[in-house]
Image 1 (cartoon, rainbow, N blue to C red):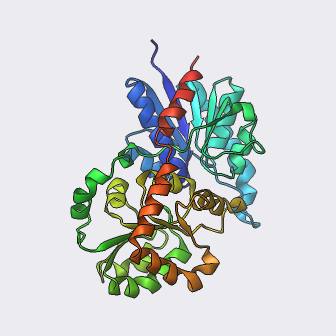
Image 2: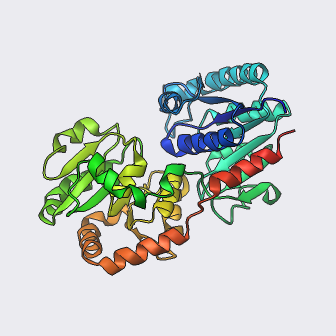
Length: 363
């Protein structure tokens, strides 16, 4: 059998990067001698995270349109044309068997060029409300792997397969890692551990809330691992190692931090929601209101409708958070039922199912 070649493209945020890496890792398990190439956007976090995962990446000079009039917007046509030309060179040099896009600006030019060249393309859409790049690409894509039902109004039904979102395989059995996790983060096993996740870049409103609540957490014997994001680390670093608080710009060992956590406060990006279903910890979702079509709220509602998590909107934080959090902290039965219900929604085989769809397209 000939040596297979795959190009994967996804980036801008961890929510697009990690699914692409998870898919690549699963493909590598099936085809150990296959060649892989990632394509991302220059200056975005994928240029750092993908090589750390052991894969080669090429960057395109591409960015999205800003919602307001900016100088960057005037450069958009130039960036797009440059990226399309570079994508054409990448495709003709590498000669992939399949091209896979997980969202983000770089996947646009790449999948467009691949489909024109007659190379099979797969879109992996993580959200309950697709981004503009994937909506445009879906017209020519061969297969669209989705994580939510009822996306027919965005994508052709005959191309869609409900797979769930790919997640890191190391999250599947975290219970066995609890002791290692407590030691790794130097945590007290007799205290409850709260994990706060604001996404890879950070969440301003969540960070403001946590800074205000730290004294109360400490008074209740709660230790906190607070991933504030790289945009906010300088602002909140001074809380690190005070009153049982660890402040992180980024967490590399997500398997261990989930294993250590008793309660999680999180944004409701698609990848985070999928991971938290597998991890099965009690969760309070605080969706970002600053995303297209409020899709984080819709992601969170898909869980809360089945009694798998608690949802607090940003506008309700000042009036609702303390009461809701304290109630969850003191109610072991509520913690247990949330854990059990969210776990029922996990799609543990998502990565394998997506790879099966990719394999079907290999000519």
